[in-house]
Image (cartoon, rainbow, N blue to C red; front, side):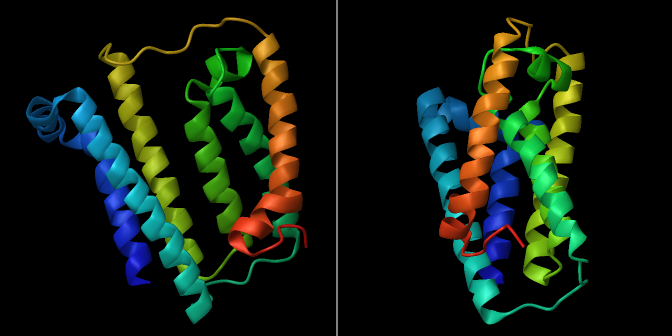
Length: 194
């Protein structure tokens, strides 16, 4: 699980640098320029995701301690939550409809739902480590964003059109279907349908 832990640490450090070490971030931007800093951040993010993915697969292949045994119905709850997460995720990439304006940060909502859903359905130590860490990161990031909004550093999305809600639902359903019936098993090696 060493690679998984290393990937999670790198992910947390790179993605919480702005709220917790703004001076370090600003010094990096000054030294490298904004494009250079963004490129470095992007590379470190990709490395962290690769470490997480490889570390997770490696931990799963080597087996992990079962911390709890979720009942079968939790898989159904997780599937339902993932439908909501898929719609929220799509809404976060579109101009603001009702979904985006009400949730403020729908991508973070999608990540929190994704992590919670997977915690409900998976009790292996490596799964719990991954999903608890990502859930905690998303909660912390949401709290820091709330503070940045209060300070006027970040602006909330302004409503544009309800058509983006319809697009979010339709594309979210298509994404959900692709994940459930194909992508999850292809990428992760586990079929989500019980």
